[in-house]
Length: 156
Image 1 (spheres, rainbow, N blue to C red):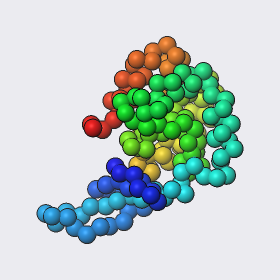
Image 2: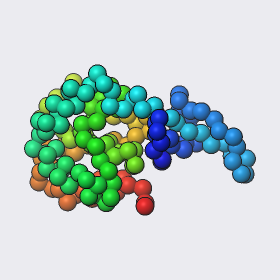
Image 3: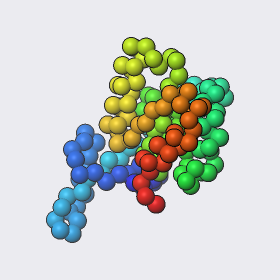
């Protein structure tokens, strides 16, 4: 995946509603790309909410952010409380197309679980990988959480 001004461009071989065809490559195979417009990221109408969430993190978010910020985890840049479409995600790594969500007590009721499933599905439709951790897991088992995050990285 490469990041460019105007959007994120990813190579795909499958059908997707936002596919655009490019000329055939050597060997005659067709390549497709998905362009996620920058207007899908950090929407202005969500700016105040993103700022509020960044300034009032949960204990688990603040703890994990201490390991992800400033590209200190495996050299990957993470953003926190970033919006993608109409969703604000806890952490996002554009280079990996990886979304990390931390779930607290609020997420353990039937409606929230269903909402999280829909949210995950919509983000995955955009070509992103979503992984979830419970807050307690981050606070009590950080090494396993970091190992799981790292396992979703593409090789550098």
